[in-house]
Structures are given as structure tokens and as C-alpha cells.
Amino acid sequence: MWRYYALLSALFAGLTAILAKIGMKGINGNVATAIRTVVILFISWGIVLAAGEFRELKTLTKNNLLFLLLSGVATGLSWIFYFKALETGPVSKVAPIDKLSVAIAIGLSIVILKESVDWKTIAGALLIITGTITLIR
Image 1: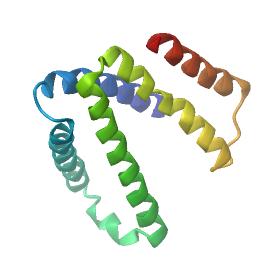
Image 2 (image 1 turned 30 degrees about the vertical axis):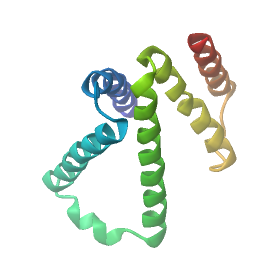
Image 3 (image 1 turned 60 degrees about the horizontal axis):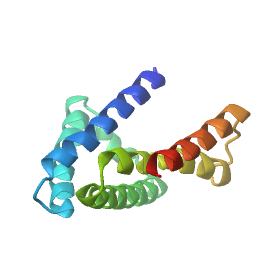
Image 4 (image 1 turned 90 degrees about the vertical axis):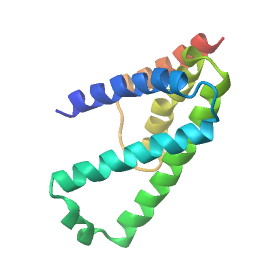
């Protein structure tokens, strides 16, 4: 099932770039990011409330909170820089560079999480890097 969620994530991430580029025409990237964040906030909490998962907040540990807050900071910075890049750059160049995050995540998963990866994963990461370099030249 996770593969379907991942494919849907990729689909919506691709749509994000196009919709954002159209939607931010004539406005600052920071304003666009703030509007997008409010929408995401309502959708996320709406899903939590609709699914009856609000009570899980009681089970959060300090470690959960720390790393989720740090993840939130990283996400926020990613969005801010992504929208800044979209302000002046073409989606066809910005989006592939942004997708280098896949190769970076693979590298960090090996170094920080001590995940083992097979040769296919390494080859895929190298192809992403090569493809990105090809697309932006």
C-alpha cells in the first residue's frame, strides 16, 4: 500500500510546482508559502479530527516532539526556498533540483539511520543526480 501513497505523493508534488507557479504570479514567494501553509494546516488537522486521532497527542514523547518540530522547521525552510526558486526560475529546472532531496534522503538514511541499501537503491540515487545535472544544464 505504501507504494500507492508514494505515487500519489509524487503526483501531488508535481502538481504543486505547476499550481504554485501559476498561483504566485505577481506575489512574493513568502506570501505564497504562508497561504499554502494555512491550507495544509486546516487539511492536516481536519484529517486528524475526522479520523478521531486527536487523543494520540497524549502519547507523544519529548523525543517525538523534538524531532517532529525539527522536521517542521526543515519542511518550512524547504518550502520557503522552493517558492523563492519558483519566483524566478522555470518549473522544469526548479523541480528536478528539488527532487535531489530523494538522493539526499537516501544518503542521510544510510549515515544517520544506519539503513542498509542495495545496489539498486544506490544506482537509482546516482541516476537521479545524473538526471538532475542533465536537466539543469
